[in-house]
Image 1: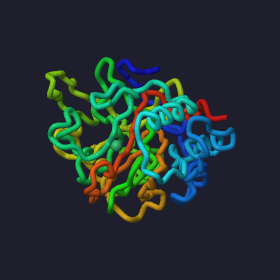
Image 2: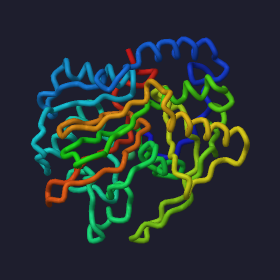
Image 3: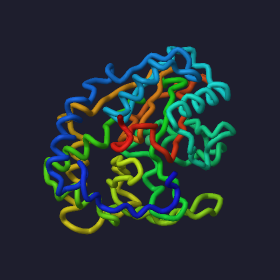
Image 4: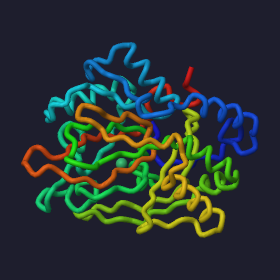
Length: 321
Ligand SMILES: [Fe+2]
């Protein structure tokens, strides 16, 4: 899979080519018609995550083709967690072709990252916003992992709710293809600006252990040649990020920010996951609102996250039957 440096070309045909108006129109019509209308439409009950039935798998894949995401629900509200559940989640992901797992500094023996509130003794998670009760602004996962050799571009992930907090901790979700449509409909030049190879730059970052994460420079939107899929990387944060310094890029970024912050987007979903539910997605745009956690040890909000460099199987434009 593509884990080496990407230099995606601007597409010369198809829905994501600005000159191919007909292909865009047809795809846009399909997309807006096919997209689920509510969170309830995204939910797929799942008897056993390690062995999804053909029907469960087909429903999840269909949702991921139409919306790049689904919410599965194992129905286990017990709050039980641990390596067995983590292994089950990795096995579940593998059923959907999600195998190229990211090597993350905070992952455990099962290649899963436990997102929970930690204190300063719990390195290396401590010090990063996900491991606090604070809100997380709009982003795609691993937006800073792009544009340098070996950067594991994050194309898919699962985010499983093992335990929910006392209050808050709502996720907002938006399919990047919907964001693309809104931008391009507003001004096709916005789409062009955000496909520029230097649209967004995240400066070099030195990890606590001295490892250097190189500068990441690349587009917001690009098309993977092998799958034909539209990919997106984005963060709403304004510190440690440099946008290309031209008026169109600034306007496009402002438009995107307004879209995500506003109340007008019917396909922007808000969902507070129940224990036993999880998001499986092609790295869609998302947030987390702030939350209040339970005080009792071992009861706090706990999400298990795994990220992959490959997309959910058969969800690219060139793969969908
Ligand atoms: Fe995230």
